[in-house]
Length: 286
Image 1 (tube, rainbow, N blue to C red):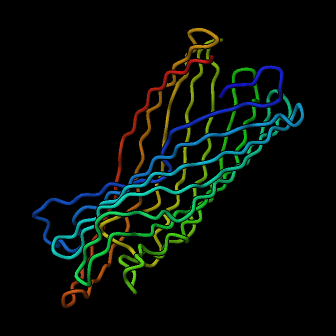
Image 2 (image 1 turned 180 degrees about the horizontal axis):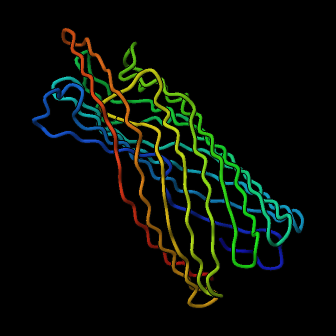
């Protein structure tokens, strides 16, 4: 973010990812038609502007250029390798009640992404693919309850019901149906101001899975629990370092998936997942 001198405007730019998954089964997996590889990644290039409407209220608007790439492989059944771009936008507001309490609200619009590449399945071939992306709305807050202690929270809602299927104008039927439901997360965190230049944090997030009645072994998603700790250290007023460590685990879920492309096959399984995540960030304010 860069404030414009002698004005109420601030300009900013960002590069991040909103969506992604990467699941790959071993080549000798007993049911390759349900396993294979599923890799979906996205990169969001954003430019934004914020306007200080009053001493308490700030308004923001941004443009998002979304690059997405997908690879889905089911041996002898389906092969997709495509990428594309889409343009979305975001709006937001921040309200400062006082120096110890502030609130934020944001909305991000993401359209369907039109990708091109290789789409090869038993019923034919195509070079284009439509990937519907969900919108997101988030409310967050920060409250400093003591000179050394603060709580913060966020509530996010994602319209994953828009992600109903992968389709192509070249085919009458969907390539892959998902029929997901709207989902989101609820998170709660605390910050302890240990010293003038050191902050310690901890948090918990309940992350609701969008998978509904149609579940898939290729994306064995489930409701997840996140536990995180982190810290910020300020070397100077302009230079700081953030560190974070998180552990997440997904609740056990039952997979019951059938396929009728070649005869009829079915697989049932119990799945769960867990992961450790770490992050390190260096910040310099110009």
